[in-house]
Picture 1 (cartoon, rainbow, N blue to C red):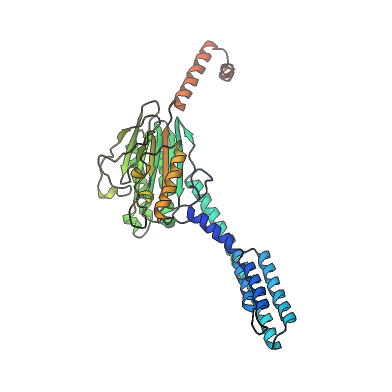
Picture 2: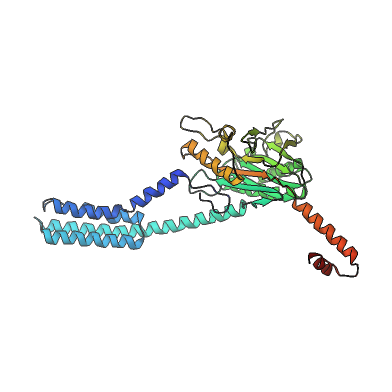
Length: 410
């Protein structure tokens, strides 16, 4: 996918190669027409060049526009008739048959082109709806948020897909900047519905729950309610692996994590060191609470300025090369330095694509967050502004609130 809204990756190599082949194929109808003329010129009159002229509009029907297909069909019919008239033929009936064949195939090609164009229009409409759904369900997070630089990507395994069961979310809350990356079991509309439920529950819980463990409990309850509404096997086996993270407001250089059966995040340091942040105690994925209740453990990890927190789904760690070897992001990123979270994600997506040879079979959701060198929170700035405003109003007790604020701004 081309980068449009901050959630998509650079163009894949196999797609670029496909575009080159497509442009080359569009010249095939013209080459067939030329080949028919050359064949007629170099062969005796009893040789038939009608197959070339019949094939040209048929090929154009699936590759070119309606106008280009019509032009190709007219040239094919005119060329066939012209060759018959000027070269002559041993049999008049054979000549008529050749021309009628070319004309019939040309008319058929125009009908095929109309059907293809209508199907393409419906497909473009479906893709547009899918892209709109992705932007609604997985909106691009702000590039800068409370002293953090943020980047996100969603990479579909299929080139024409736009949304699936992988998800990410970023929320600035009174308790800190909270993040989530998850992977819903299954595919299709059921997975998309679960994604919407999870993100909605996360945004509500992130604002109201004072602890990250409380957010995890709310997500668990939301998935269990959703599972009760879904029929079939998903009612009993549906689950979501997820990592929840919280960067507290202020200058405390830590990040808090809750891992529910998800690949552990990575901490990418400015000197190229890459450290994994596995959970001290493993927990079941979200949606499997009926197997046993246990308290979520919130774990703290150092998160100093310049370090990038990288969260991703198993589309990264389960990507295989031709020999069947899994992609190891910790090893592949070690020793590299990235100027921004966007640069890190661009490199990671391209490197996974090289590893799989462009044949990845699972979606990827990626989220990268870097603490900046000067981490002064927006909440602190707002508090400072409110304190200054209160001091101004205290000095001017007779001035209405709006006027006092205006004087302070001036």
